[in-house]
Amino acid sequence: MKAISLFMDVEDPVNPLADDAAKDFAELFTAAGVKGSFCLTGEKCRTLTARGRQDVAAAYLPHSLGLHTNTHSFHPSTMELLADLEWEEGCRAAIQAERPGMDAFTNLIGRPPEFWGGGGNTWSPEITEALKQIGIPAYSYALTEFADHAPHRFNGVVGLPQALSISELDWQDDDRAAPAVERVLREIEESAQPWLGIFVGHPTKFRYKHWWDIPYYAGRTPPTPEYGEPVADEVYEAGKQNLTSFLAIVSKRYDVVGISEALTRLNPFREPTLLELNEFKARTAKNLRSAIHWPIHRPGLSPELIVSKTLALAGTAQIAG
Image (cartoon, rainbow, N blue to C red; front, side, top):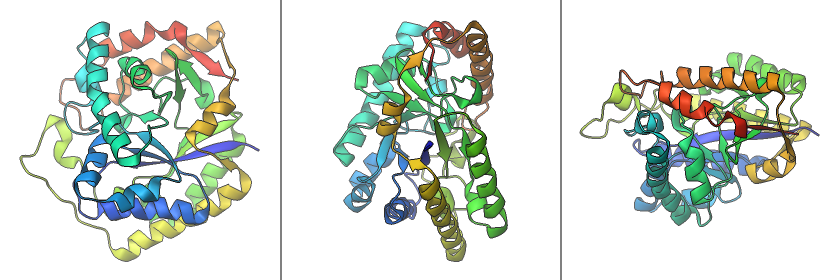
């Protein structure tokens, strides 16, 4: 039976209802008997700790949990931090940036993260050195990419692509949810990969009309928190119900696994052919150049040194299976 993992990002440390939304979705997966793969930021972990929300942390314990960077959209982002640093200095900066997130996560959850996920899909190859140093074996939402979203190993760390996704706006609208689910189910069947990562949303975006981090766009940092406007309760409930229906479908058709289990299924890794390696280089460079346009980033940020540092390590890339 094909294996899939279902990802959600838990990252909003600002809006008041975001903590309750985070708890709601952890409990939704638990009630459905489905192991979710939830990615929590270090800042969210610190916020939950400061607010005494151990009930939220407890709701996540049955699931597969990852670190969604230390600070996500707070500046500097991963790319802003590392875009102008040479390799050795960048490695030191990446370790220094992500270790506090690891500590905050472990303090709240009581165990280390199973994976790491870039905020806004941003990344730089020094992250792989940081992950090896702090003991995280894989990164999700991989911008390093082989054809057909193949899982792979890069610089000794497993890269897990996001193959498919359904947005919060799809879940909240019955007329959009049904075709979105049909599309994802069809694409799962069409894929030759033994494991696929599927992104199913952010709890805060189910609860709020706009992204929590809009005040941080284009390199800005607001002097005080800026709160969002919640969606209507009936819209929030519709989104949860449509996601619940999807969980019922996929749990019957596929093995929905956490990341630790997914990693055990991906061995062995093999060397790519020359054609595969060249395609890896082209796809990865394209992804990195695209990621620089995440609206959080400060104007004028260049991806070219990140591309160069990444492609210098292309010889370390291996494909699962």
